[in-house]
Image (cartoon, rainbow, N blue to C red):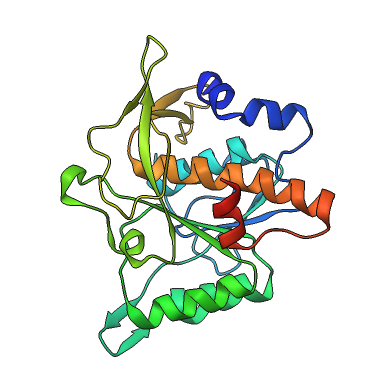
Length: 244
């Protein structure tokens, strides 16, 4: 599943070399059902936000891609909820999720959503980066209209989308937001597992920068495992950016 995209991205080579996300912790900023069989018990729900039971759901799909790319990483589902104004930032993301990432030493966070570009939140995220958290987000599906709020903030790594054609060409996805804030692109149009009971053997394709973002984030988990084992520490966000 997604073999050609994994081969072209180098994921297959990293897996064969033993880099599968072992001892790396990833936060995915939306709910899913941790009990889905294709997660192999690697998804944790510390605040009880499990959702989407018995149906196909966006959170299942983004978590599925993270797990496919980094099958031995531990994935924590955390809330992205928040209330923002020019002078305030509150809610579960800034009050609960970010402190959890710091105390539990989460290495990577994925947000497959538009989000907000809020000054107070951005400063708080910079503090989390100093604790070793790297934050990756989807650029958005607005084409020429530009990127979403998280991607616009400059404190997240913003990921656009490309597709692999039947002829093997790597093509820009027409929906993928175009803007100077887009940092990297990765594959979307990827296969995920059907989460419905009775459809355990079915897979289907999903499109959007929502899926290119966890593809890149999962790849960074392989990189973080490499540096943890070879250098004795993981990389900070600016170092990962330079590595890419």
